[in-house]
Length: 396
Image (cartoon, rainbow, N blue to C red; front, side, top):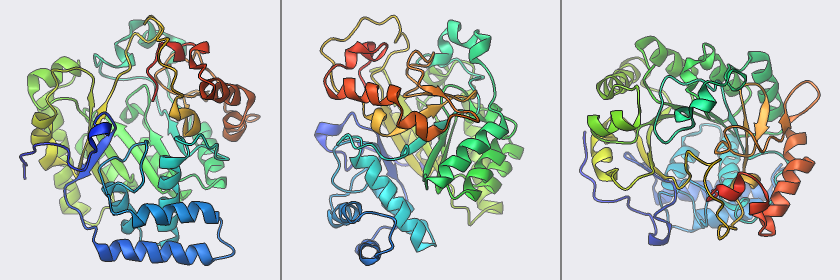
């Protein structure tokens, strides 16, 4: 099953540094695309549609543009990524197909054009800030972070349900269970996924380092059925992998993912969960081709995530020439384990703390609140560097 790869096809030269993801078994055809177009056109004619004609027209324009690519991330896109189209056609409920296409269109367009949706397009929810690894490029390598008791903990399920219930009220499509820690350390992780699915969050993504992917946990995850299960690895050989992911055993991770695949094939053959390797590229010595050749036979997708930000974000000298507005401000919020809300997780010590979700404070009130609006305004006006640590960051 291992493949020989030369490059990430479908990635425009001017966007080689963008997040790219390719799927190995594609079912997209002109007929399936045409069916999607007809479906959205019918929705556009529906006077009771919850979606604006402008947004639906934008979705149709994206579908009519056959310049399909592997750029699933945000950016100057005029069409959907192949992985997005694969996901769209996978839904048995046509309403979910439309909802997904609208969400992915907004994900691509709103942050670029600085359009504020009435609710975040994505919520990154942190089950825990603790991690069992100390990866060299990660916040967990910062001793002042992982030894700080106030910063370490696990999300309470009542808080989690409050967040998901509000997300459901606003028809949120996407949550990412991840941020500063390893989600699989949370004892109720599978229940978190199940609850989000019950509340019609149609794109539940889980990021994990796969070190705790035991046989029991594999079955729990497959039963809970996240839409995407992302394995974070950054190398295709044991020496480099273990040098980057300090505390991890390369052979054990391979064994864990292989066993997960065996269980899925034998016991969950109709599972809709797609698996992905996500490789963060942060130094020149990392060999993307070698990594893909190593991992491609073990997953449905392979993604490359180039990263310019630095672990020493708080000590790094200011970047006066970096004035581009950060797209995250129009896209998502990060909710830590204790309910604290941040505009990004590069600021992993919460200097930009926006508020805390509790009985009296909603996610939406923070998203549309004065602090977030002020941050957007300064970034939009080229004054990104008025904000610390935005002033030290290359942005997203």
